[in-house]
Length: 80
Image (cartoon, rainbow, N blue to C red; front, side, top):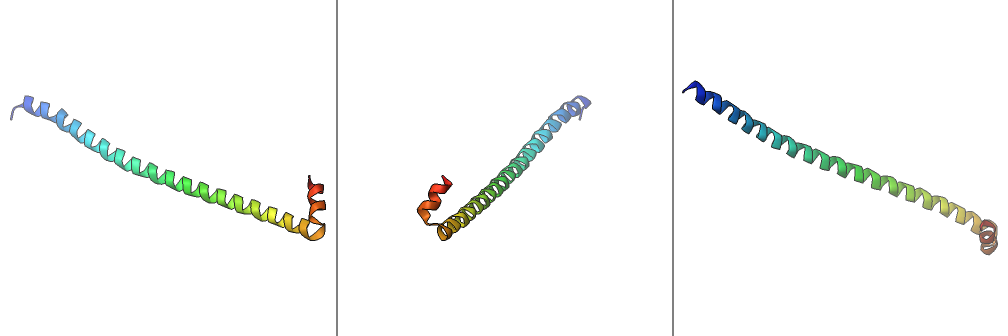
């Protein structure tokens, strides 16, 4: 095989290997990003659910205190 042929094959082979490795890296990174987004959405939903549960429990305690101590209408007018 001539040197000229060898020199022309090397850049082509290198380009093909780089393109293949680029596609593999893109597939792996895309999968990783999707997993990270899913994990972030899940933790955000859990955090919001916990915040809502805490808010409802606090409101429930306030309503129970108002309903037990003072007649409801008087307690409601005092708050507002």
